[in-house]
Length: 280
Length: 339
Ligand SMILES: Nc1ncnc2c1ncn2[C@@H]1O[C@H](COP(=O)(O)OP(=O)(O)OP(=O)(O)O)[C@@H](O)[C@H]1O
Ligand SMILES: [Mg+2]
Image 1 (cartoon, chains in turn green, orange):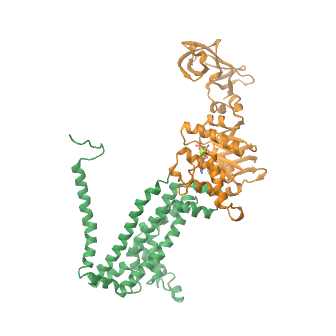
Image 2: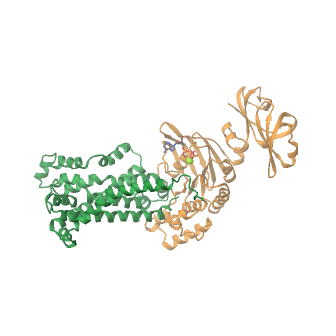
């Protein structure tokens, strides 16, 4: 006798087929290329790959990438918390407009984002001369790279937190305030702890994008070796110079950073339900 | 603490949620705000708590104008409909919150806070559960935590918004008694919101009935039940059979039924008769018995008057056997209002 099937369960062969399609697709577009990156990087042996990463220009690129992420992520945490708090817990005119504005980087091409900053801060731009007179450099320098990265990443934390805070409503905050807590105390002790998992998740996504951003950064960077190249830009340069092992070695390092991020994210998701049960 | 609400007005958009509300609450009183959904109960409670500011009018605490004082400054205990417990804190931390936020010399020492938390847990019969998180409690237990958290700051007023709304009937009943007990033990002026008239009548010293942002009547449970001032109150508080008809020469007539309506001008009117005010009477109107329901010491009878109106009668169990076929009933007491 055939085992009773759950009413919503499809026959076995259908499941197998669907799974096979998904697996084949993943292998083709995700796993294969990823494996290729590591294979190429290690083609002439581990030592050569490590040499490529230890090259001064490569190290400078790693350093710049880390600096960019180190500035961008905290900025986005502060901005994201403030924006989400304002949008989710308060009513004010122009709220819908603010939400649209936060979404802007998602809909604008990163290249355009880069160009905006060139237009504003570049030599021919609005503040170009003023910056030159004051001996400050934004475009083709670290500040421009950070600005462009902030632009493309700033929806991540805010977008993660807004629905979460909205779902939680304001009654816990009201309870805290009615017991004599100040607004700031309530924000730190009640609002923020309630969204801490969402915040961490947003930070990881933001960090991954900050380290991997190519388009916007490429426009404002100027590609000065050892100075204004981030890891993605450095990979491109090496590749264009036919230094495949070098290119893939740096790319592999970038992949490793992404994988670490993903593992952290998954670990969070596993840990989260235990806390989520804390909801009513 | 006495509380006075004077001509309080609050609009949301163009709709008045509170329309010229006046209310005096005596020190140590347990007052129920009763009304249908959307009548402004929560808005009034929040205006007292300082979580909402009125457009005009005054809120006085013991003769001090606190209309626009912050919630924090008012020292009220507020119990929210959905409890609003802090999910990420233990029960003990939740209860201690109001003491933990204090600064400087206002803040009691740690040991004192712990002692107070234990005392409150005991008061609401939750001893030993201080280490749990809200998610590890039943609905009724959460409600009690919310109550003791509100009491921890030794509030001058305790405000509860539909405190038992989310609980099942048995738990409601026992928590009701508990609230009364806690109120009597602490003597704190208490206002609670409910749309359950049984709850209001059973629990409160006085009941204020709200309708469309206005207070229709305020009085003891007995007063509002026995002498409702308007058709709305009569229909909302207690059970009754309702008739629409007209007043002619001091008498209300509808279908076959005639009721006294002294002092009422001729015109359209509605009348209400409580189930226990219907009595068997030889000179009464005919009613066809449809269903007889025994409820403890009472029988409840559904019947139809010859004129077609449905009525509900409550009688003593001893009379149960008399309700068969067609009976003659009269109203010993009725309430008639011009429509
Ligand atoms: N923040 C708000 N914005 C707009 N309208 C509101 C707001 N709060 C309440 N109202 C409106 O004011 C009226 C009274 O609301 P309130 O919450 O006081 O009713 P309630 O008597 O507590 O009802 P319920 O029994 O359903 O809780 C309702 O019509 C409601 O729609
Ligand atoms: Mg309400």
